[in-house]
Amino acid sequence: MSDNRRVRVRFAPSPTGPLHIGGVRTALYNYLFAKKHGGDLLLRIEDTDSTRFVPGAEEYIIESFKWLGVKFDEGVGVGGENGPYRQSERRDIYRKYVDILLNNGNAYIAFDTPEELEKLRNDIPNFQYDAKTRSMGKNSLTMSEDEVKAKIAAGEKYVVRAKIQPDEDITVHDMVRGDVTINSNILDDKVLYKSADDLPTYHLANIVDDHLMGITHVIRGEEWLPSAPLHILLYRYFGWEDTMPRFAHLPLLLKPVGNGKLSKRDGDKLGFPVFPLLWNDPKSGETSSGYRESGYMPEAVVNFLALLGWNPGLDRDLFTVDELAELFSLDHVSKSGARFDYEKAKWFNHEYITKKSDEELADMYAPLLKSKGYEPAREVLVKIVSMVKTRISFVADLWQETNFFFEAPTEYDEKSLKKHWKEESPKLMADMIEILNGIDDFKSQTIEPIIMDWIAKNEYKTGVVMNSFRTSIIGAARGPHMFDIIEILGKEETIKRTKVAIEKIK
Image (cartoon, rainbow, N blue to C red; front, side, top):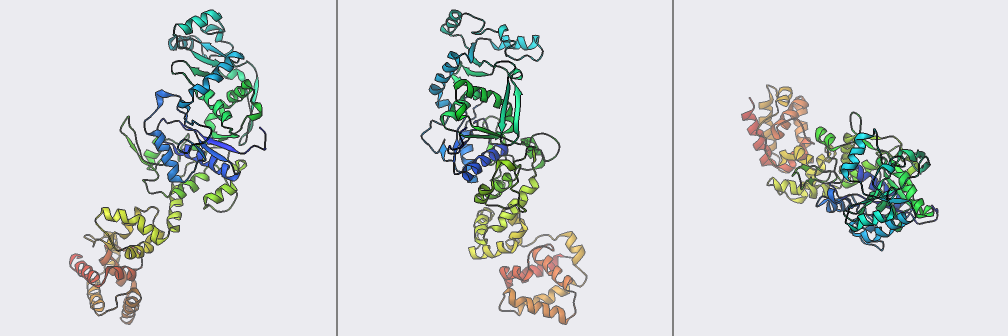
């Protein structure tokens, strides 16, 4: 490939279901690579396999990247001069290239039925359709030209297969793994086109589109590495060696525990999403959780995924997208699989939550409160959020941390009572009520010195008094600064809760 071409990369998912988080990472690495080099990122939908098409999947893919902030320069949903960008809309383009391969002898027509192929597999151990076995099949290499034409004219279904030459070493110059050499004897004559639906398979469509769209680098998951030798051969068959993209095969995302590739089952078992957005399967009716609906910040997901299999070489974890792009290099992508640490994902979300302003968090929390029937003044909610934001990992956690501002306790935590509610607690709380009654300016900075002075003068144990008070107001010995809490609750509600606690706690 000429090194002076403008960098152009693509993400090319199939609309066969929800976008797996591993696919999101692949798209993200393409995005960072394009930004780093001032290039273009394309979104191409590879929908040539009509049998696996799932309604809504394409829309889901587009919505996922909008949420994550991964922007495409060209492609489905964006447009561009290299369209159409759905492979099902490009069938007229592909026919020309099928004919080129047939005419130059690098492909052939095969009429074998599924039943005939199955018989060959049963009769021959480790059967594959290749230079050694193609003579056993019904194809244009074993039939006369007239026979082939007659079968096509009669409407017989056929496929076009790549004609792989035996015993040839093919080297993939991989930007992550270095040189990987594979002998052509392990390759089969892959199907490139099916007459049944007049569409190419992934292998042919992929190469033609990458060439016509000027793709300079193919950055994809390591599961596609076995396809690379065939793709290199196809570039040669077409005479496109000078425009062949450079390959980079990314490591797998591995299970959090055990061995193997991260799967939806792992997420279901351990309680974390493996899809960016919630997905309702139109076929099974099954619903799968998503990072957005689970309360993750898109910036946190991007930061977390970027560091799964790539190391910027710095002693920190938090990066903006622009910083990630500036630092990104395929040289620092790991060759081995990356263990999916979902607890680390929570940590990232916590860090990004704390970076949000109190006002932003309050606005994010308001809909949840409204659903529970509470609509506090915004300035009050901002104060409440500011007290607890460092304690949470998700916006939904705010309810657990702040529910006592909106609902008086009806029960009291047993452990808190056992540890902090002493024999003298009822009298102390009754005396506390008298003092609170006498305070007109019910602000935290006014209340605190008065109460602390009373505790000191009477030589009470601060822990006993304040934890008894905290349990009375909240229902447990938890929560932020006590005097900030009662300022928001107000004098009347504070005294009311304290009286109820004296009566109920025996």
